[in-house]
Image (cartoon, rainbow, N blue to C red; front, top):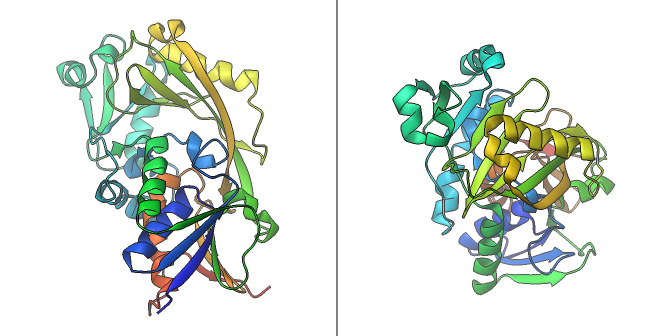
Length: 328
């Protein structure tokens, strides 16, 4: 059995892999350019929605199936998981979009009237029906990353600041930075904003189906909301466009006019790592095991991918889903 492992990259994937390895008694060293979780990691800008059934609208079956492990996993690590489900709504002119979404997804029920008003009073005045995915949840990604980092450190994991590649076997969890080794990895740019809107009260993630700029809004507490996110084929990680920000804010205003008076706290941008099929991969390449390509499902799929990676490293006899061999 492997007794010590070096992990390159301490974003959500690297931290989850390290957590799974430590649970199996493996000594872990993590190498990352940043000393602590922060803006340098794509996962810092995530929405934190643990919404496998909603993702089934566009994602492949494994995302829905494996994503159902996420809420329990995060809760087992001591992360606060809010289990209030999620709502999907449309504007009046786009009502048919909700019916299409309902046909392509599962584990939901259509609600209206008093039921919708009981869940989200601020929406009921402007929207007459919604899809309620009761089994979904959400977390605060930044709090989750900080918690895992601290828990690993207290549990004996070693963190090294740097970008160097270690000698010998390692697990590479660098996300888009691993394009130097994974030629078919691509970037999908996402832009998002953080608002303080004390006049709006929402208690669960809301997805607004919009033909031009679909929107999700995730409550962070104390009147703070994360709005996202655009999806642009680009590896550019540092420049948010005025057009994208205006579209996000316009969609939020369409959802609830009180967002017009919100305070703009942050504008964020990063690029999600994805393979051509938008599914993750566990790739053995020389002495490295690459865990990558989680696309927009970092917090949703990292627990399952981390479990698979830990099983591979510690001598699992079965070949896990998403396992690939690269002999190039």
